[in-house]
Length: 83
Image 1 (cartoon, helix red, strand yellow):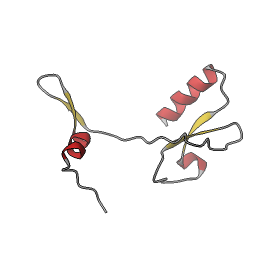
Image 2 (tube, one colour):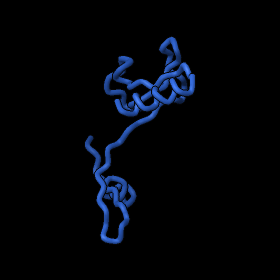
Image 3 (cartoon, one colour):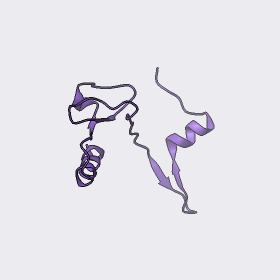
Image 4 (cartoon, helix red, strand yellow):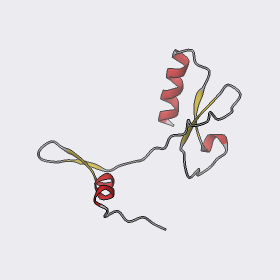
């Protein structure tokens, strides 16, 4: 909801008619590809506008480097995925 609000605020400021919507908000509950899409003034989804949000747990190392657990595991090939 925060992304939707921020994107739409900026679109209004810029005078744009397109709006960001959550896929849940347009009736595509639990869409497997996208969390957000851009729609035109009549509600039609704009091709190629989908985006997906991920929540990552992060930690700051003693040297100041930020580590993202999920990304590190994926990069190392140690990530297990539920089937």
